Image 1 (cartoon, rainbow, N blue to C red):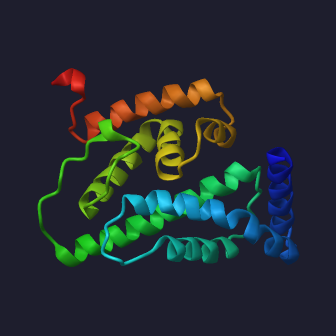
Image 2: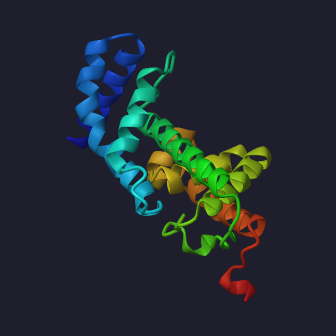
Length: 194
């Protein structure tokens, strides 16, 4: 049953990419709950100032997706990976605006030993993490993408492997190495260093 759901979602994504607006109308209710789950994952760690809700985040992503042209949707996980990336950028833009508005304050150290329970209670932390991910992307784009898909997008190891066209073992290895690199980049220390 889940396989036919995935296949139908992929078929609709491809039809939409080919210009079939009816496919978009059928696709929207199929993907909405999963987009809400991903947004909820983000919002669980977002500031509680009420500036954006999960539903508003999903709607903003939806509006951006509708404007996307010429995407060759490979499969369902590819769609959710792009959606998760958009959510990350929307929240990052909001965090950077908050930082620009406040100009000051002490940034809290970001502890990646707690991933995936990582908290972005402060906009500075999100900005620092994004800077570190961009630096990792210059060195090893796949490892940066693994962090983005698993942590930010909430994708499983198997979904991440499908998006990146690698094995689940490769995803797990990249996940461990990328986390260690980010810890070092952000100045954190693992329990072994204490």
